[in-house]
Length: 417
Image 1: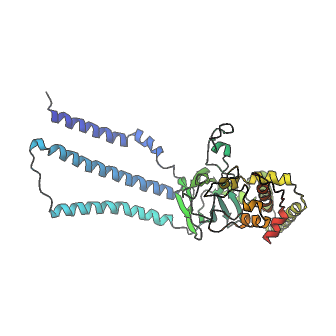
Image 2 (image 1 turned 45 degrees about the horizontal axis):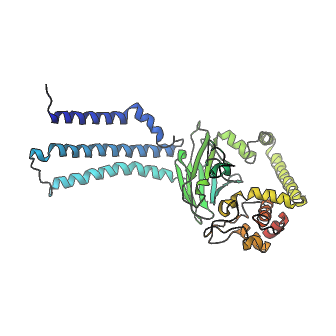
Image 3 (image 1 turned 90 degrees about the horizontal axis):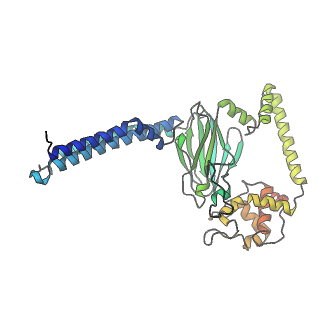
């Protein structure tokens, strides 16, 4: 039997449609879902993923239905068949149908979306609270329940980032631009509430696998929460999701999820996984609570006194300060450049600048307390006395400044007071 041209065309369209549907719903298509969102490890992330897929499938169905009707109409009512089109321009029935159907589709999307949004904003009944502060360009974390605080900065070596310098460039690491010196530690199976703010410009704290993303705005405190499933312990990575400046790409977020017992030991050890600290903490638990508490207070006082005494007794040489200052200045170089020449019109130079060659008092003030209305942040709360003294000494004797000035930790301490 010889098929007509029209019949063959219909057969080809049917075959194409069958192939498209088979591809979308076959095992191959499901395997490609790994190119979708990251695997969710929290209830909210799973809800977001489910909502995303629901709306995706609705869009696919709408696409197939609309284009099927359109192509059928083009083919069936083509000009060569002299088809006389029907007149629907003022059909009340058609107006009602194409109003009700989109309305029902929007309701089908809005109901689950509203449930997810309400759940995302429910930060009540949390087990611990972490204050997260965005800085240019690092994150600060304060565990409000235990007093543990630290900063988290990018740990990818500059030699990997600066690939233009072929002589010193290093191969890219496994977690290029997604690795930090300090990781956020949280327990699985417990609800973690996070208070988000910023110190300078707008940032955003985003961990895709947790389904969390919230802006960090100076002067405001936003909230989010997550509860990682038990059995999903591991390392999870995220990124600042707000264009916060030239080093926006250098603000990764790394979260280490541990079991509840491991987290309790980490807190008891003062934010350390060091075995000796954990052993000391376990030993303290075996003692009576008042005795352990008293010993902890005494130990803290002695340690603080010893630390203060050590700092005060240490005689810093210019070479020691220069070496330490060069290390600490890696953060400063992000804006002012590795050669100290800055970025004209955007970031001022350190080389031959009035600050680095002028009065030491002015140099101390701007490093410690920043400058309002500019990206220059206040580092008095981020750096120790030694680090501030070292970086100022380094800046006043590098990049051709050669002032010969030496700033000691005692000078910084006096400035704080």
